[in-house]
Amino acid sequence: MPEWFGDDGADTDALSEVLFDPERWPVFRISSADGPGAVVIYRNLVGDYGIDYLLTHPGQSYAQQIGSWGGEGSGTGLTWHELLRMVDNPPPAAEGVEDTAARLLLVLPLLNELFVPKAASARLSAALVSAGAPQDTATDTAERVVTHLVRRPRHDATWASPLTGS
Image (cartoon, rainbow, N blue to C red):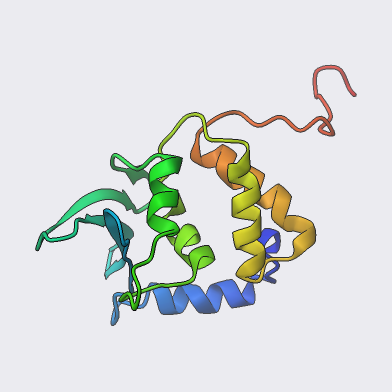
């Protein structure tokens, strides 16, 4: 669904070639001034591609794997509140990603909460627009993404019903 993000597909293919190049493992650090941060690693082993999410703790030399995606997601994940605390509090002169919209988009797959505030879709929509998604599709895209992440069925009043013909 690249068109949801304002892309024609060719750019998505080119980005995928970079992110999933077996010669490189792109790593994105999301540090936090007042708590745990995250590291997003594109694991590019031949035959074992995926994305690993590690939780880092200030003052600790090790990281805890809290999510992994390689077709099916696994891991404990974070609540919406925990995600926002991480995203909105980069330390001064932080190592890693500083832009809050990019930070949110990188850690959003860690969302593991059944009920998120209504403001979550609006916040995600703003992050998508900031990252270059078209304004006219960002709201619907954000709602679809949040619905998918919280694993709830989505109903759009404009959808026709195959049972009633309306």
